[in-house]
Image (cartoon, rainbow, N blue to C red; front, side):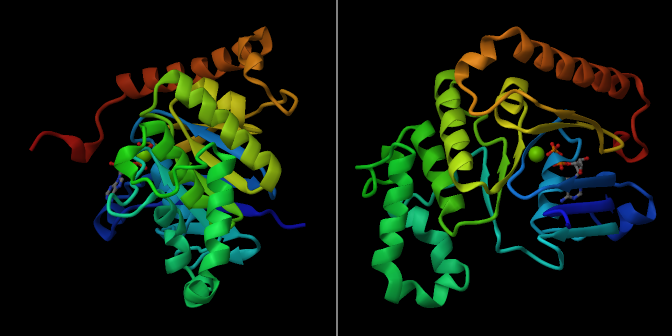
Length: 277
Ligand code: ADP
Ligand code: MG
């Protein structure tokens, strides 16, 4: 059986000049994910996490190597994925409901059916909003919601077209610790119910261990995957698990890897082109 996500020796330089200088944002990434798998990627700033996401959604094409998603080579932006970022990025002039509906107004096959099926789509959006605790807020505008509520609405928007893959780039970074843990549980439940793939980029090691089946650690210069750690904590996971010794041990182990990477980066000479100008 083929893998749902399949990266074979993928390298990316952002432009021709960088390619000529052999300066790659990510190097030699190979990774295979099964359908419905939940992975997290952790690593220092600038190591290539967002670049990896752009490759996965087809926003960037690799300079070398190949990427297949759902058995098909990636040749351009993918419709089977949904994305959410650190800043909720809801449109301020649209209600929460209309923000969630936005992808259906843009992405085919929904786009051409939107007018005719609007009622049904609205019901779907309302169900999704209710499942993340936002029933009753459909007609509110983003600025009337708290940060955590806006982020929940963003996740609904990323899921409204029922993508097979959800890409989350530091989605909870701007939230307080309690709200963040609440959203972990919401994401856990949505994933358990719908079994889409999740690729979560995060700085929070506890978050990665609580949510993911597998955590990848990325190094900087070169931007590579250096550690792959299976998280064997049984599911469903409750927040209580985060206070157990097994949990702490995994977080501690990952912390060790990150520490080692930071050390190497700090003591290695600065890359050529970053000399002061
Ligand atoms: P992360 O998300 O892990 O912080 P990024 O993927 O954003 O890292 O960046 C990885 C590397 O690629 C960095 O060295 C960054 O400067 C470089 N980079 C990111 N975007 C661009 C771009 N549009 N053009 C050139 N270089 C870029
Ligand atoms: Mg980033």
